[in-house]
Amino acid sequence: MNDHSPDLSQFQPGQLIARGVCRLLASHDFWCLEEFVPKRGLRMDVMAVGPKGELWCVECKSSRADYMGDAKWQGYLEFCDRFFWAVGPDFPVELLPDETGLILADAWGGEIVRYPDETKLAPARRKATTLKLARDTARRLQWTRDPGTPGGF
Image (tube, rainbow, N blue to C red; front, top):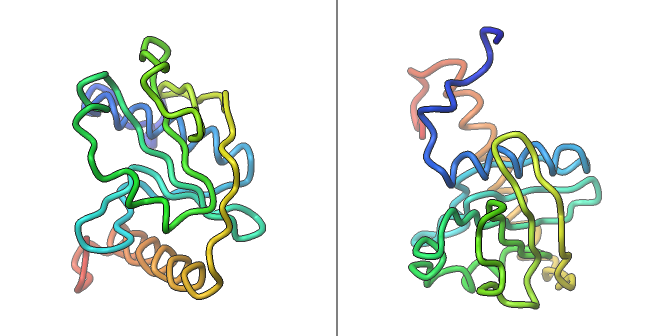
């Protein structure tokens, strides 16, 4: 283990899935931010931006109860071109809506099992969401390098 390896025992099950999703999407040249807030009251587990500016949202569910308790996921659709669920290998995937994407993942990676249809964002929404994603990412990176920075997360 090198100095940059996190202690995975400190992660919650959904965070481990999110880690694997981010690794998977990076292999497709999509770069991610976890726990992205597109607007007050919504928090996406993973928001990813692709090489052509595509925006993908991935919600990570570690159990049936976790999925059944999610009442906000449809609110994420207006902020992404594609919406995916990411679940572990033992998750009952028949619960998930057929029109959504499906990723099977663990802490080390994953596989895209089903792509959802693409629903292109309106240009103004794409610009606003991409700008917020870029600013939130830059703020977190700056805060990581200098925790005393005003406006940290």
